[in-house]
Length: 220
Image (cartoon, rainbow, N blue to C red; front, top):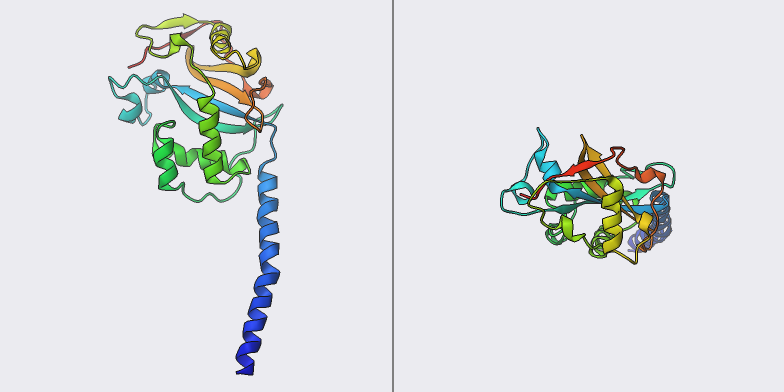
């Protein structure tokens, strides 16, 4: 009996000694993974993605009559001068409760899992807090009227598109918006946020479309 009590006492002591160390280790990993300067909200122009060859076109995003415009690609940790960190450690699958909520923002389950693995794990946040940040950032951005449901192809310069976003979001700095392109067509709108999700100017790491003009494909 005395031996059993001794073993229990030793086990409890071991748990006490390991517990704080384990917690400190987790905190250190989170602090290391949060080594970035700001967030970039990436909004993908669905008509452009759906026009690409050899991609998996989910009908929820690319089906005719869906009228999908911008969808959330992700909320990416960024550096001021360089791209931010990616894949910062093991990533457990995103819970189904979070997935169901995020399907209102990100079109497919696969992309939700991908964004958590590649970018969310570098935020220093839990799954719930990271995807809450994604929703908060997206909900704070108003789309310009021209991009809600264009039925015809448009052609604008990157500066024109960024100015339209700035006009629709007057509380954001004008330089908080950048656009990217593929083969002369609008690919993404990128919006920059501080770590507390307040709007801020983008830096050189955000990138920008080099084309003088780009086409904006109509929604399907």
